[in-house]
Image (tube, rainbow, N blue to C red; front, side, top):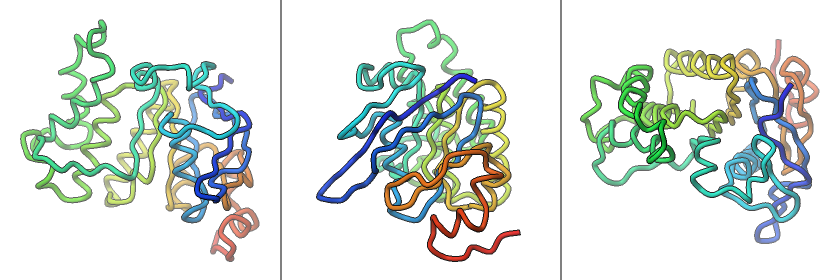
Length: 242
């Protein structure tokens, strides 16, 4: 099994707080990995490190076997797409404008020839084609989330990093998201998703990284990682579980 990304002895400390203890994790390609833990446990920090948005204090991060620190911003964007929690758009860009941002990394390359068809496909997949000319600022929270999911899909990076992408979505759209992520993984891509919906992740993901106070308690198959004992260790309470 090939490795899509890995952290090697990585740690982060800011303002005297250990956001991530020294951690070494290998993320296999072709699978969906959920990152689960309490607020402040280090989930977003982990994703920011994998995206190259945050530099580690110790260790290093690799994508496709290449040190992330040695890649340009454009090279990173061609290899990974990040949907962070902060996705506010202040100006009246249209839905299609925002989705088209996902193609910026490929400008001037042969792959840019297909930009419009890729944008159209992303709009259709996320049920946005009928509002493509609407200003993003006029949309509901769930609609805005779908716009950014379409942007990430249009980027066509092998590694998808999604930080609570399901937070504003209804049940139907969450199911559509899960199906889209499974399709990406089945085609050889890799997904790392932060979510508080533990019950859903039990069925939607292949692997789980459980975090507590910046430390990785467990990394393994969902069936092994998501159990009463492990969840009690991660959350500090008894979690109802079938």
